[in-house]
Structures are given as C-alpha cells and as structure tokens.
Amino acid sequence: MNTTATSASITAALVPDDQRLDFLPAFFGPDLMMYGEALVYKWMGRLSHHYNGGFWQFHSLSNGGYYMAPNQPARLRVAVAGNGFDAFVSADAAGVIATLFALGQLAATENGAHERFCDLYHALRDYAGGHAEAAFIDRAID
Image 1: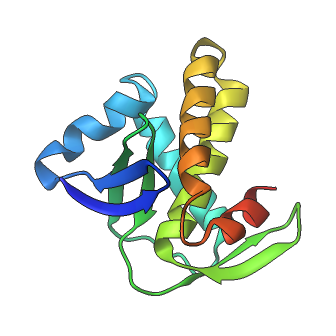
Image 2: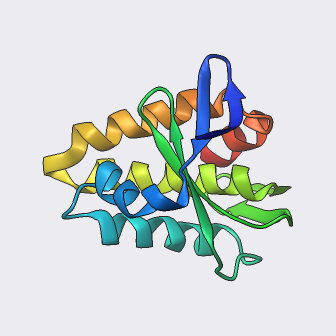
C-alpha cells in the first residue's frame, strides 16, 4: 500500500485498485455499504457546489478508520451553512469533511450500528487532527 499522509502516528494508506471492492463492505457493513457510499457523495454535493462527481479514492487508516476523497487536483469550496464555514480546501480535506458528516449521520440514525459508526467517526477525527488542513477540517465540522 502507498502511504499518502501521516497524522502524528496515524497513517492513511490509499486502498489499491484490487482491494476496492472489499473496502465499502468492510467499513459500512454489507447491509449499509451502498447507502453509506451514497451518503458520503450526498454530503459532498451538499457541502461543495463545486463538486460535480468523479472518481473517488478510498483510504484506510492505521487506527482502523477510513475515509473517501474525490480524486482531483483542484481545490473545492466547502461551505457549511450551520456554522458559517466557507473556504477552499484540497479534495483530500473535502473528502475527510464529507466522510465525517456522513459517519456522524450514520452514528445518529443507525441504531444497530451506532457504536461502530461512532468509533469510525472518532478514528477519522483523530487522524484529521494531524492533517495538513486540520484547522479547516475542525472549523468545517464544528
């Protein structure tokens, strides 16, 4: 696996193409994988009017977490109406933000999997604390 980022001692690794089919069921579970994936995309569309689809990369974290991020070089404008956040961030940071929002929603709504999604949210939040754009991520999810 290629290591794509380091956050304190938490590392993110790009999921290789030959393992992509196993990624979504591993993190969302087989019953929620389609819903969970679509929820991340929906959050991205809600948070960034500059986002218009495309290929996404999957990242597994050394602490057991994960996130999804659009594979594009351009920065995305992310705006969160509820807290006034409005800034251009990298596609990677935008993916972290969208994944955090999706995991938060899943933790609040999926009773049978509440604890799992809370754990995944906190694993990603721990990683985000050491991200190069941690200040933007913090402000977006505040």
